[in-house]
Length: 115
Image (tube, rainbow, N blue to C red):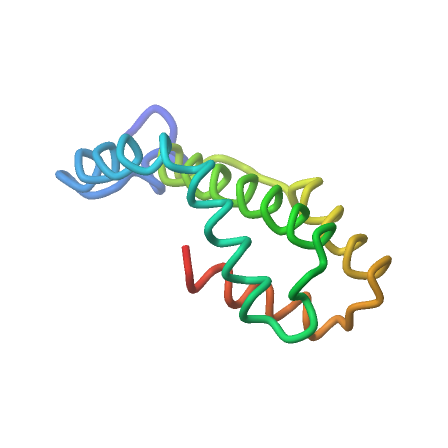
């Protein structure tokens, strides 16, 4: 029996850990560029966001934080995570900008699809 049953439960199948390590090594150095690209595309694709630089910056920060969280989870599947403070800040930027909740939800949908 494994020393840590939780860790064993989350351990990837043989060979998958090597593939994940390669993916992480390729993606981590690109997070800044990916976050900026995703943010620009989200603001272009979600109605009503184009031209809102505050939301653009908030989407970029949130995209970066969320990508790093996903990469951390891929590296350590048993890791416990909480909502990133950047995600809460993004919701605040939408409220202050007068954007509807539907735009925030669409922002996450588009951002996840792009990632």
